[in-house]
Amino acid sequence: MKKVLKVLFSRIVTMAVLLIIQIAILIYLILKLRSSYLFLYSLFGILSLTVVFFITSQRSNPSHKLAWVIPIMVFPVFGALLYIILRTNGTGRKFRKTINDIYKRMLPLMQQEKSIMEELESKDRCAANQARYILNSSGFPIYKNTETRYFPSGEEFFVSFIEELKKAKKFIFIETFIIREGLMWNTVLSILEKKARQGLDIRVMYDDAGCMATLPNKYYEKLRAKGIKCYAFNPFAPLLDIRLNHRDHRKIIVIDGHTAFTGGINLADEYINAYERFGYWKDAAILVKGAAVWSMTLMFLHLWEYISNTQEDYLKFRPEESELEDLTAEGYVQPFGDNPLDNEPVGEFTYINMIGRAKKYVYIYTPYLVLDNELTTVLILAAKSGVDVRIVTPHIPDKWYVFIVTQSYYEILIEAGVKIYEYDPGFLHSKAFVCDDEMGIVGSINLDYRSLYFHFECGVWLYKTESVRKIKDDFDATFEHCRQITLDDCRNINLPKRIIRGFFRLFAPLM
Picture 1: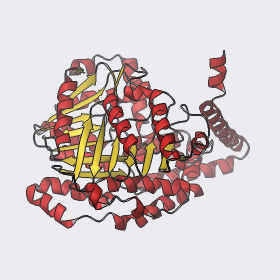
Picture 2: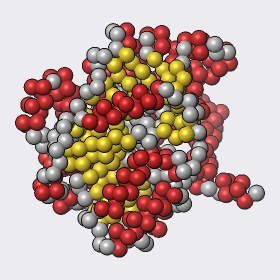
Picture 3: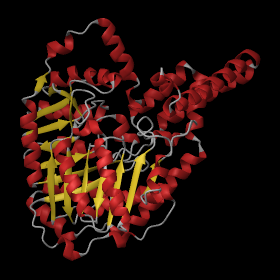
Picture 4: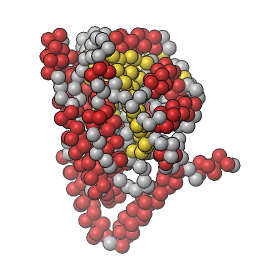
């Protein structure tokens, strides 16, 4: 009974109920308008048609447009009003302007070292074009003098993460989507408390919606009492607000400006298999040491400035040259961020670039496979051109409805020659690409609409680093624990399940 009451009075249930009440009131007013004021209702019908014309004229993804147009046409007044409320919300416009103004102030500090780009171009024009796209679209340069280390599991990442935290002498920045109290977070928190007492600048930023079911409300106050600066990004309020769509899905850890981590791993026990949720949880992360960490420091400070309403002296977080002198790493490293408010899906286009430029193979880890037309087309084209395209998804999902949509893409891809594998031991949460033993990406970016279009995300693009070979080794080992999906598997689906897939697929851009 206590567990039931705890769920009923939890923050997530309270927020959901309040949102439902708002929608119910809106529906009631519309029905009242229809029964009593037919002329006004007809005018709203014309308004709905105008909204549809407006949506179709926008530069957004066609699938996302369709996901809005259908409910507006089926429920004309309600759908149109809901869209208008979200679209014209003043806080949403202010949010966009503030985020972009901070980015513009940072941009001069991310100058590309010309000799590095020229050197890369002399070695591989194709790779240089990929790096130049990331630079021109996101502002983040490519670096040498940077070591990287790939972690094929949360357990391996956690050991290194704790070791590096203990070495911190100046500051620790942690940005994550989810924190859940338990072995992992409690171990990290004990180190952060100790470092804060020693006078280090400790900052933690978590996504409020991501932690709604895992942390108590205003958890940041508890950390502040321990001397840790902390904010919840984009606090979730039970109001119809477009900002709620934009979450901080990034995982960034920066230590003293010369060491950083990113990948798919949040700070919760399931990510290191100290707690089992969906079988064995396979994830991935990457350690970055050296000059390229500067980009990750600025990524963190970008959202920190917004949520804390402060202006930082960025240069005081830049490491001394002496702290980077002993690094002798091969290859090139380019961390990058993806901002959903700049009208450029950098993560998706970087993925498309890599798939389209592959000569021999491209292997992909993704927990969710919810593709738009552009990604579907480039995957099919690569496979039909003779490239060995392999995608690994979970066998045990964490979200059943997204898994239904994921499986709906299998047939068309397999028909074209793409090989689909499901990770048999459990849930695969890794987000990683590897291509031709030369290029790789590790980050927080899933192959779904929310990640590609609506969330703040990040990744690290790699060229001819030792970590690229380690990513390939991880894929080779993982295939041994996967079940390859066949066309027969896709076609032996009953009619009700096909109808359910079609329904969820229609609204995939809003998931």
